[in-house]
Image 1 (cartoon, rainbow, N blue to C red):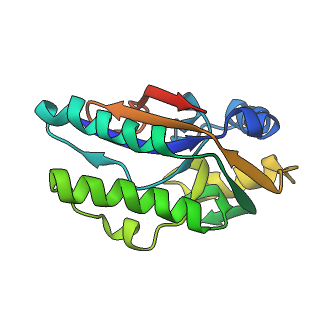
Image 2: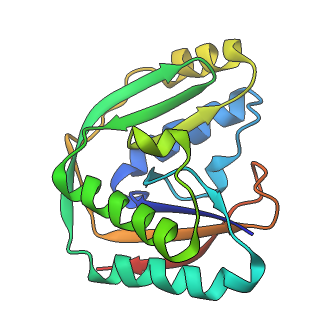
Amino acid sequence: MFVWVGINVEEQLRETRMAVDGVFEKIDISNVTCQLPLHISLKISFEIENELFNSVLNDIASIYEAQKPFKIDVKGVEKHEDIMWIRMYSNAEIEALATALNMMLKEKYGIPLHEYDLDFIFHTTLFMDDDKEKINIARQLLGDLNLPETLVANTFVIGTSETGENGTYRVFKTIGK
């Protein structure tokens, strides 16, 4: 079973969601994260053994439930080869949350840190496709987004997938403040 963890910012980025959906209607992009709520990723998705599923997800939920709301400043839209995202500025609160999740998973379940987790860029994925030209077109179609300067981290999500393939992830649990 594969798991992803994040901060749900769908409601705070409602206008962005509508703009992204409009681009998906115009061009065929392989990324189907649009099935998920817009969220700030906290670490790279990871695989767990099925027999650990309930325990791992309960421990993630416990970390989320103990988390007090905090603010995250928005840096802006960035394009990196085959992905376009909204990049967030790092701060002490989001770093502490990501570290708590990574350390719990590593120490309690032996889940190693992925190389991306070592210098994680907090972001909300908008588009991803193996065809870099499609990402360029999506960026042009998206135009200038009216992004908020700050988002509030007060709703957290845990998602799962049987295979880890794009398009197979679903929200398993939402924890809100």
